[in-house]
Image 1 (tube, rainbow, N blue to C red):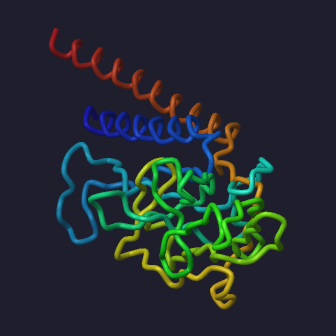
Image 2 (cartoon, rainbow, N blue to C red):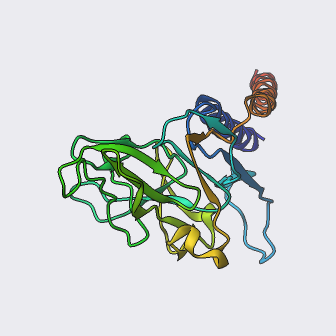
Length: 257
């Protein structure tokens, strides 16, 4: 009995940790909530071999939901949200080789014309090259306008001149996004179970890419009310385990008295 109660404790604690993380990121741009997945284990499995004591339940994995969050208007040109399928591609950090992928489209323009994420990773185009916005044109005219249209085309204007495209924001699509490796801060990394199927964004209509909404950010897909309900259930399970543990202790003391 003690081992089964302990397993229940561990399951409830894990659920509390997962839900608490979802709640703490309910306002984090591009955050994707996780759900703790469990399985019941029995005294004997179907092959006839015994299951270790204390393994009445165990965590299989944390399943991450990539359902789209709500759109938040910011009116900032380099704030971008993907309405539909697709993730922004970010360059590797210095000393690393892995691209990062994210739904957090909060980007900024450096004085050198680099479009970067919060950690300095560069936003990549359809060729997986960093997007560069020249601060002046060949005639010496200063950058006067910058826009991103719904296809991801980056448009610039210099002086009193008209707009012209300089880059195309790339988007990546994966065959199994739930298997991407989470890297924190809304960033994900490719795995063998989640391979990229396309990276050109709007240009590849067959991959079902969504449109880019400039001036918007995608909010977290964690609903604080739903997470509170899950947290209360996990806390109730933990409390029930505490009462069972106390009852087990009292019974043991009586037998040993």
